[in-house]
Image (cartoon, rainbow, N blue to C red; front, side, top):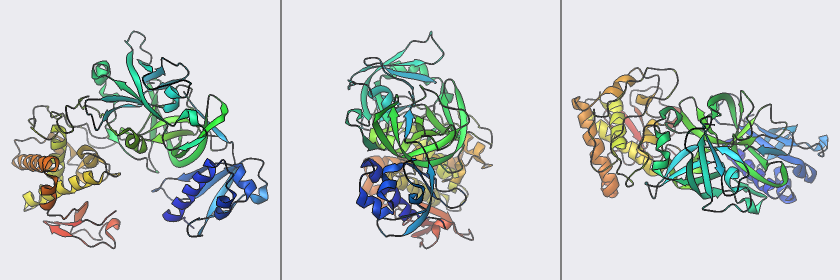
Length: 501
């Protein structure tokens, strides 16, 4: 039978704790239903991502020193005692961290080379830029330290000037191994002037971030090309650096996927994109023996951004923001890659820059409320309601996104942005000469200014009562997410919900 989400989470957490204890916590092993010998021989675990076909079933790999009769067929939740079936296989203990479009190296303490993942902007200081790559590339060697000189250079372009920066921070602490971590990443302080030669290469910048889905096609972008692959799983295993198995670190909650070609040394940090040109993670290394041919390990981007306190610099965005919400208007990002309508370029002069809230955020919010609610009879009320839903999701700062652009462009959330929506070209082309879009712009500017300067006023005036979801009232049957939930408001032709987690 399929394993339920809550017991799965409890078992995953317990497996991470067991592996962190170097497999010597016999009491925890017993609560899971593992013998002491099996616990000591446990090498890695793997779990399919949610959303795929068929049941989600854990796979555990054990060394040859575990007797076959002790390989488990079920595990128990340490919280409830509920059992779930598992697959037990033989597999190697250690994966190997591997050290592109842009190469990265710690010039003060040379050891490994890696690849640039992306450029980030610090949320607390939007004028501060950070180059992101793998932590073990820049900080595994002794005596790596904050302030080390870091060099970035364009792969395959020997005449291009290098980009110089300084090591700002990294995870994990490589001087305290062995340990468990969710992030293997390093940040390099780099000036906007140094990065400008890269800014014009729009196709090399992601359009946003996303979580990997079970049926996603993924691409590792390294050595001047994109290598496709698929079948992402959640994964937990120990990695070692440069073959040194005495100093492993357990990377818990990573992604394991299968690229069409084997990754190489120097690929660590390489960005992993989905087919919609969204960044989902950064390459960390190769999986242990027994996981599968060519299997690679990636760190999901969400915990990296949370640790870094930063946001992604997206395609066609200005590198630097003068303040948290003071960016001039920018062109709308191109539609997500993949089948669907051809893009319609948006003129940079079509929508004038707005004072106050970020111009790009205003334009994206206006396009969203216009696309979702322009056809309603009381379209002003309907468009305002949609704008409040977007801003309520931004306030939640969850997997929906942490700013207006991320929330609006999150795949399959607001249908007007779906790449197969026949009205997408119209959405991208509309400008302020359209009377209803002019109204949408006014709504977006007013509500974003309230959210920035007087957030409680915006919340008190929210007609949706804090809703984060809605659907057309005529929809039958209603969406599955609405089952068991009562609408908190009806505005125009839509029902709104504020109790969806």
